[in-house]
Length: 96
Image 1 (tube, rainbow, N blue to C red):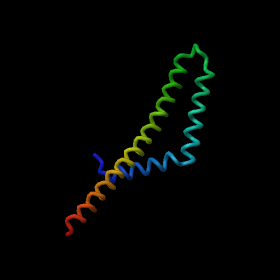
Image 2 (tube, rainbow, N blue to C red):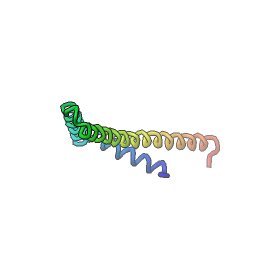
Image 3 (spheres, rainbow, N blue to C red):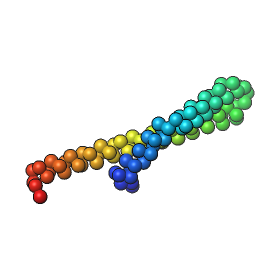
Image 4 (cartoon, helix red, strand yellow):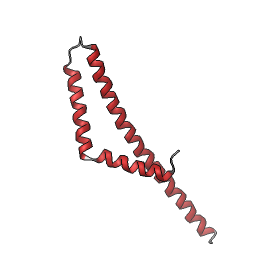
C-alpha cells in the first residue's frame, strides 16, 4: 500500500497528465477517430465494430484510472493536512 506522500505524488503526476495539452489532443483525437470509425462502419461488420467499441472502452478506462489517481492524491493530501492540523492543535494544548 503506497504511503500518503506517494499517493499525493502519483496524484500530482496524474494531474500533469490530464492537464497536458498533448495528452488532451491525443486522447480527444483518438476518441473522435474511433467514434467516427464506429459510426461509419457497416452494420454487418460485427467483429470490426466490436473491436472499435472495445478499444474506445479501454481508452476511457485508461482516462478513468488516471483520474482515479488524481482523486486519490487529493484525498491523501487532505488527510496529510488534517493530521498536521491535529498535531498543531495538540502542540497548542501540550507544548513540548
